[in-house]
Length: 134
Image (cartoon, rainbow, N blue to C red):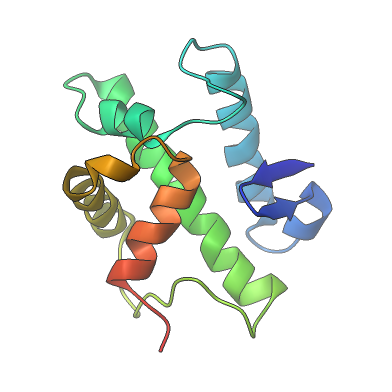
């Protein structure tokens, strides 16, 4: 079972048209980052995400965009497939992965006081602020 702050998701709940993609993202993150020195208490914080997002190398920027895309994809799957009545983010039609990443990067730059918190929760907070459910 994978834990995302207050949300717990089993791989079985990720079944469906995009579930396989989500499992691949989770597996890639676990493999790629599980062996890195940036893991603190089993999770990434906003400082690590900020470091990746401001990196000049391709790996860092790829890790940044991949992490944000994975967290965003989980939110959208959660909204569309798991709990229709509960949602954290309500993106309008046409929001791209690049646009979502730009929103999160901007939010991280504007909220340095929050960067010690878990990266996935900060992605959720940034997207919620930009695309709240009404």
